[in-house]
Each structure stands twice: as C-alpha cells, then as structure tokens.
Length: 400
Image 1: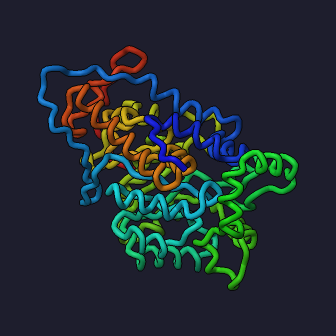
Image 2 (image 1 turned 120 degrees about the vertical axis):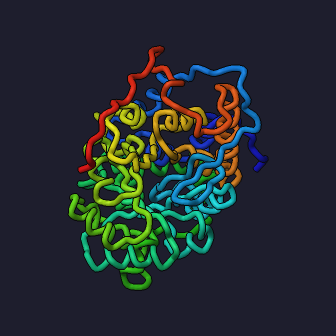
C-alpha cells in the first residue's frame, strides 16, 4: 500500500471507514445509545476559542510534560481501548510501540487482546494498565500482582461501568461475545464489500482472544470461551470501599478514570488517588450525559493544598483540543478513537502519523496563541461561545 500522508484526524477517519466493515466502524464510532454523548464531546470543543497574545517570544516551542516524575515528549498519551484486535491484528502491540517511540504513555486496556506481560516487554517504560476489577477476589488480587511484577507503575481504575454496557451488541460486535453471527446476512455482505480488511483478518487466523483473561481458563480455550469467562466476572459494581481496597493493594501511582461529578473527584483524591481522569468514556456509556470538556470547564472550589492532577479524555481530534483542555486545568490528555483511525487506515504507519499530526498542531497552535510552553496556558486565554469564562471560586474545601 502506498504511504498515506493525511493531514488531519478527520481525514484518517474517512480512510479508516473505507477500510473497515460497517459493523466495526459503527462499533467504534456510534457510542452509547443514540450516540449523542459522542457527538456532544466533539461539538463541545468547538465552543472554545483562544484569544492570542502577540509580540511575545514563543520560540522554541516546547511540548514536553512531566507526569508522575517522568518527562514525556508530548502532553497526551494513548488511552485504553478494548477489543481492538478486530480493527487490526496486533493492534495493542502496534499502539504500545508507537507510544514508546513517541515517548508518550500507552494505557493497556483490561479488555485487550494482548497480555500485560507481552506489552511490558515491548514498551516497559511507557506502559500504564487499565484495571477492570473482576468479581472473583482471587483473580482481582492476581491481576494487580501481575501488573506490579511486569513493571507497571501506573494503574488506571475505570469506574464508570457498574452494569453491562448496552448498545454495541446490536451493531454486530461485542466485547463479551465477539461477532454476533445472528446478524450473519449483514455481516457477510459487509465483509464481502471490504476485501482488504477481510483478507487481513482471515490471514491472522482465529478471532482474537482477550489474552489478559485466557490464563484463568484451561489451555486451548478459544476466543468465545475467554469472552464468556470475562462476561461472567465483569462488570463489578465498584463502590468506594473497593477503591480503598485497591489503594491498599496497589503501591504505585493510582488514577481513577470515569468520574464526572466534582464531589466524586474530590473523594477520589481523599482516598489517595494521584490523579483523576475526567471522562465520559468517549461517549460509550450513556447518551444523556455532558461532554467531558464541559465538566472540566465548570468553575469549582479548589481542593485543599491544590495537590490535584486532572487528566482528560473523550472527543479529542485536534492538537488545539488538547491545549484547550490544558488551559481549563487538565495536566495531561489521552486520545482513543484518533489513534484507532490511524491504526485502521494504515497500521503502524497510520498510528505514527496521527501522533505526528497532533504534535505538529500543538506546536503551531502554541506559537500562534503566544505561549512557548503549555505551562503558560490558562482559562483567561479562552472564550466559550464568544464570552469570557467564569473564574474558579477562591474558597477551598477539604476533599471528601
């Protein structure tokens, strides 16, 4: 295939949709329910604009960011995405290597088609792990121990799926069942009309397993066996006592992902989380909740001591989106679908190109708005719907 040089994430999305069967592209793109939250995430960023400062020194532009004592080259990483072996074979491995080479973090999904140990060998210094706590206590302890033994330094506990997700199954793909062959007429027609994906998929052999969980079943268990097992132990309706248990078990850095209410954010810090990710799960969980960026923008009292690190994901498609989030208080951002579009369209080259595009957009936007470093960003530089943002309250409150 001739090397692609798309110039935007949206262009890669078009190429990805040309490559992928519709039942997979819709599984990626539609989001929960009617897909309104996913659409809301995208539209929300367009409501924010920068008011540039001129006649200031902006070169050289720096894009590095220090998180948990480690300097990353860019202010974003690649978020956890489950079951992406249906998009490209070895998708987790490709994205991990892409993150390693770009010197950014990669979060391995708890629903990955690769194991913690394999990704730790590929990208030992850039691996974070998304923890979906299983209902089996023995397995819950074992997964934490394996992450620690593999050298994972950051555990990302995702807390926003108290019940089994709905919606994706009707589009023909499910994390817990794989392809839904009750829709075989639609699936077969779609496969025939996308021969490049079909050839790549069939060349890889059997359907990809959720390798993270295969070790808890007898040797030789197939993909469907593993998915059924995973469905039997997840999701677990996590409560605060579960997070307190995880905090005691996990001695590394702890990130709580999927919080939207400010009181929940405050409580997460009070139990010892080092960071919280404001996220509506890319719009995948529910179609009647706000965009993540709007909740980040909400003025709120500062926590005692200001010892808070906020991350953001959901809806990022441009480098300027990342800078908007940071101006609103995010320390770091994560991309999901954007990386997946590049991966689908052109494999490893596409994933690398996505990182290049976002990096270039960040550098250019920083220079054009008058900041040489993202540390200089602030909400005073932004307008929302053409109006100044409300300032955060000056009062403080204790977390909890």
